[in-house]
Amino acid sequence: MHLYLWVMRMSRKVCRRIKRNPMDCINKRLTLDQSQMRDIGVPVHLAIEAMRTGHGNQGEAWGILAGSVNVALLMAEAGIGKEYIDHIKEAQQALMRCKARAEKMGVWAFDGDGYNSVAAVIDLHEQQLAKGNVGVIERALVEVRRRIDAGETLA
Image (cartoon, rainbow, N blue to C red; front, top):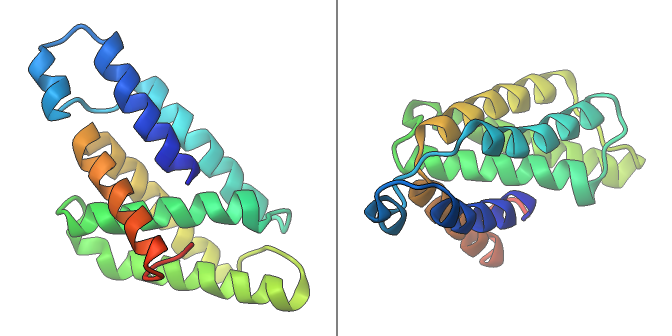
């Protein structure tokens, strides 16, 4: 949800702030700039580090990572990184193992394979964000929300 709200706000700000062809904003063809990429990437990297060191939690770290992995899956399904769909689903499974372990032992942390899987998908997701335009990202976020509400994906 953190990523969802951010991109929705940023897509509106970008259209008002950047002086480009107005049709680009209407068609949402703009890509994220470096500061926007950093604004998305910093919380995600802090979250994965918290989970790696056993200092994560469900409300922030796990949720940020689950949201990022979900968006990565939807962007892959839309054609940006399509060949990595199986890897993304492995990362989703790793997040679910982490959640199950936390419910049982009270510690939000990855197993070794889980960390590697999620870290690889986070790297992929950053590449997707760099390649995708705001419209593609926004559609992915809306679809993630729909799937979460329908109970079809990580929440």
